[in-house]
Image (tube, rainbow, N blue to C red):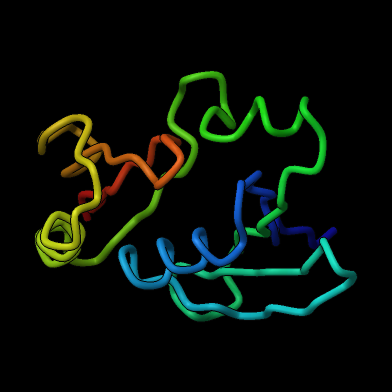
Length: 130
């Protein structure tokens, strides 16, 4: 059996603001932006520009969905992003104003820092130990 996780929905307030944050600040690649209706789009973003697991932006359409913006995981880290050069990405993100939540820490599993996205979801930037 061959299965893989291909997309994770991120509930957002505004498609364009989320696209700008993830592409311009975090360096993601916009893989697809297809208009499905006047209010709905199919927007996929990839951290590496390839066929890795993508974020699928979902604009909140109900009060319940809106209540989850910025709290996708109940206050836990939402995304774990592995990098091959921690300090390159750390310097890039901090210079672009991405909010740092927890400073750099060297752990058994690698070097890590925790950031927030534009809505408050937490993101671990990790360079795993080889």
